[in-house]
Length: 250
Ligand SMILES: *[C@@H]1O[C@H](CO)[C@@H](O)[C@H](O)[C@H]1NC(C)=O
Image (cartoon, rainbow, N blue to C red; front, top):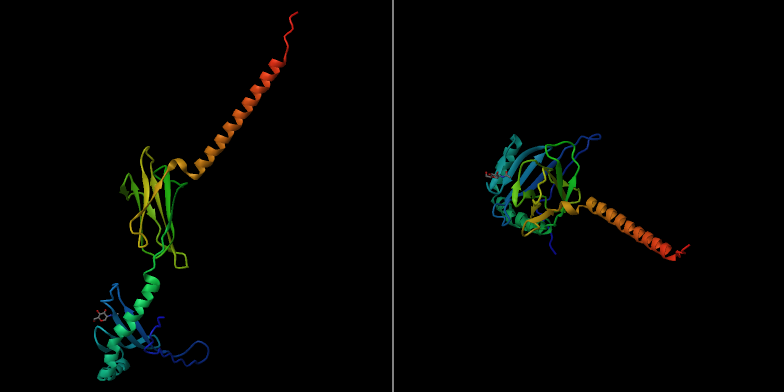
């Protein structure tokens, strides 16, 4: 199993005087990187008192830099200690790259597929008679691209999208509205690009089988069937009655 390697113990001395006041003496270690091969990794150790950074070690500088009167003295002393500087420089590997590999495999490299829905929504007032809503739910990571295609071409006008919204459980959701004037025979699609997908996901809008239309159709069909049954029953009843009557000539 992996264990995170602690190196500098974060020292927090607080002397409480009364209820809320105190002094905080602390060292903050940070790792900065933006590439997946960690080639740009920078290790930063900041020595602070209360909220003021006195001195800082930046691995790409290779020595301490003082920012306050006291910090200048600290920096001068630390910079004389070659063994200490050497140890801190090594932190880029032993602390930053080591831990980044663990965090990234546990979090950053995970991707969860979005659930995409497309539906027609009622609009307040707009320039076009119809509004479609495309939504993507429960995806991770945050970065996503949602766009609209009309007959295969990207639509950019009359599109309004929300930001990626955090659900608070590591997942995100996003929504996009397309305001448009329907044309017969056209094809409208919502396109989603995300780290969890090897190719863009498209969701087609099919105006003929929307949920409410399906329900209306079902009600209509039931009514028709019922009508036919009653008509047949009536016809049978009529036939029975008319054949049952004996015509007597007078
Ligand atoms: C570390 O030092 C380099 C070189 O001066 C600088 O470009 C970089 O911004 C510093 N990094 C941080 C996190 O302060």
